[in-house]
Length: 182
Length: 426
Image (cartoon, rainbow over all chains, first blue to last red):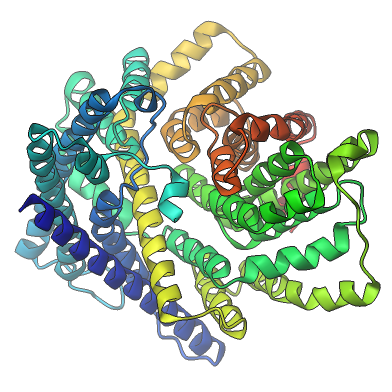
């Protein structure tokens, strides 16, 4: 059961990351189109504003992928000196703190979106983007990050109670940059 | 408050809690204990406004650019070409290591990616031709650090973002020191191998025909560099726009190299999202911590502390440099930058130091941190790609290059023009 859930979370985050990557490629195309059109005198405008929204989306929706890929940097100076149980304890501490912070941030992000919806705010730009659209995407990314990290806390606890240290390590352990590349 | 923040920063990091999360926690702590304002309510707004940024999107673009070059097989071609040009010098291939690292620094934003690329391509050659593994691998680790100095540099973008400094000016300022260090690295290598030829392996020479034949593999890299950097200074494009153009050109080059496939693009995109998300969690965390520290009056407190120490600006500078060297032994570099910039840079500018100049000095210090043990990311990257031998060999091999960096720091202090000449002149 827990194995299946882990695999499902990983797969979902991978798909999300691919989607985020494609959106990035899309904004590359948009920016280049704007530069080319500018050279022939047509001003499209707005690509700067849109790429800001894209960045907010990338920065929130990418977080959960980096989480399940163990890519969030941790200083493992002390951790590598410890035995299995010590490592498992630090990993548990790390994921619990991460989940707590992610949840606090997600909760604090909600008022930004809810106020925008309440007031029907639009961006102070020629595009007059209704701000709830980019903010909804951004907020839901943080919410997903919070949900994923809370799920990982529960899964880690289950694994540790079953003394399944190896699986727990592959779920919330620490990896060096090089191990990530391969 | 300064003591409390510093001690908890180091303590939480030592517990191996993710760096970005530590910064958020500290921000929440400062809010709870040191300010009467309900700062936490501003958290959402801070997260939104720091990540909704058309400046920062240059980071994923430059990461993607580097991924495409590496996975598209362009790095390997560059290395072969440089080998033909440099292998007659004392030290032979070691120069190709430094040269390739320098060129990739110029096009991609990341030191780790650069070191990993060169190490993967170069290492198989080292044993075959009888090079001393220490110097050989040390040169790759050191050459890779140039990636954060020579523009485009992700670290300079982060510095510019956090200190509100012009990124084009920072890029210009990094160019000369970066190139000077590359040349100095090569001179030091040649000198060492002249004194002790056994370190340098057998020297080979190639015919001019072969050399010029190799040049066409360098054309794409130079083209990419000139378009990306040139378009920023010619005023055609913002750093973000030039990064987007760079991605497109890199894709075209990789396609010419027959290095593009669905699988390759997928790997590039996944790698980009992973690295970007990792960087952004740290940046957003730093931004929030910065916000709470400012509200809690950290700047005033630090200023009083420094006035109390009664140091001259030069004395303060030396203390700061020492602090970075020591912290650089232990803390991963991006984390070191974002955690300290909000605290240190205001002090330095208040003492009359130039923000652009200090940014470049900081980058040299950060480069040093990348190749000094026990936490020197590039050392581990190169060691990982070697698959044999001891980590201590890489560390020893990097020592001559650390000395070059120290010399660069002294140079920057006594001759700030090394960094400031270009941005002031243009």
